[in-house]
Length: 169
View 1 (tube, rainbow, N blue to C red):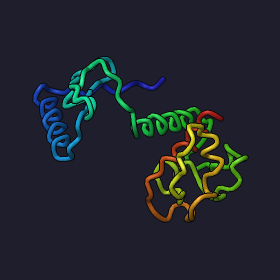
View 2: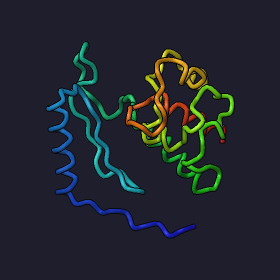
View 3: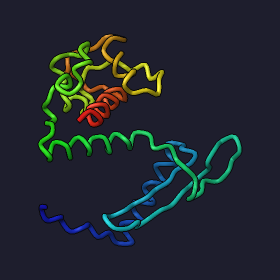
């Protein structure tokens, strides 16, 4: 196993800068509540909540409540893809159809890299079902797909396809 780099050591001043930036971001964007967590490989360096948990009840945000993960899951999916690449089980340059041959309606040149970089040319997804395989099955059949690699377009369904690849591999 390769040597791991030393963890970055953050000073109290750096952590306070991160905290101040996050609070300013929250105010500027009028985000009602948020959680800020900074970690290194072995421990939590900063954990703080700010604002309210729900607008209706005006309950304050708490450390022990659940938060929606949102698009952070895209980073986890990309990490899983890159780990599989490191293991030699796939390449980000692979065509999606190499791993999901049943998705034959997708552009044959669509690669995992296109999906990871939001350049897959996929139209907005329907996002009408919690079943990612069903969502992936209709991808490319709704809206007007574009050729892969020609423009950036943020794509939740593209990451659903990547998740299906990870699950398959």
